[in-house]
Length: 353
Image (cartoon, rainbow, N blue to C red; front, side, top):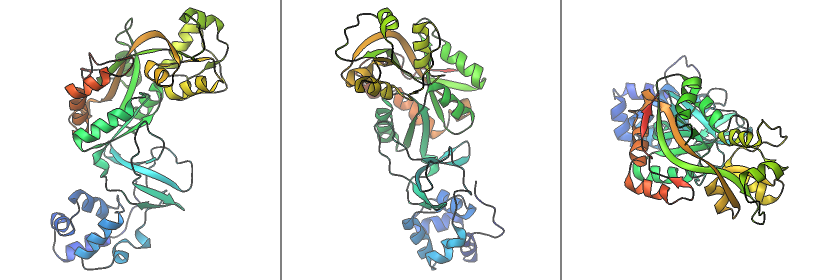
């Protein structure tokens, strides 16, 4: 991730010249020891405040410690996925012992400040979050913003919840780019499909933590008086289509009796709702919460189980432990139960695949 260096970092050299340990420099500068270690290893370019504090403790200038020769570039670090622009803001997180940069995008209900930005392929870090303080989740739960807010308030950790369909989320988990992937293939008729999907795609050694059970169905314009799901399947000509591999797309294909082709692919429940509300689609499959909040009609199709999948090796990680505690708390389960179409009866339950 970081470029190789043929000599010690200036911070390490000056620290050792004073016969200080990393712990002692940490205390004198007022920055975490983990930050001192990461700076000396070249994994972290500190924020302006931290750089000034370290320079003051070592009685030298910031330029002497963090001059242009020590800048990280976009080629020296690992992006979880490629940024769209040459200048892009990013968040940082540690996953599987590696630090990844995540291009900033709109997250459900949250507005985390960026940890840095990339300009002319040079990274400039500004954030105060340690990479090990961030949990990264990929999934399509429209209530993920609520989860992120409650998680931060209860744990002091940060949750980045990227909107991705279940199939893509599992691929990101398999690649080691996220800690947690959300999927909702299990139904009342097939209650173990989430486990089967994880076993088929990822193999064993994973845990499934129940986030909620929810109702998925068809969103229709408020003035549409179609009375039944079967009538929708017969009459609707323009559907809002989710991406192949998502549970919502699978649900729609089952309703229509065969896979459908579409030039326009939508990547979230909220996008389906906006397509119907905007009038360029007659109907689409989404969860009840999105449809009702948009003022659309909703015809329920099936109840699904939304599970959070993570490696069993991560179960004792403090970030995952904090997530488990939150989902098992009475306060959070009550919040989930109050959302339209959500049921928290099994929230917090966990199985090992």
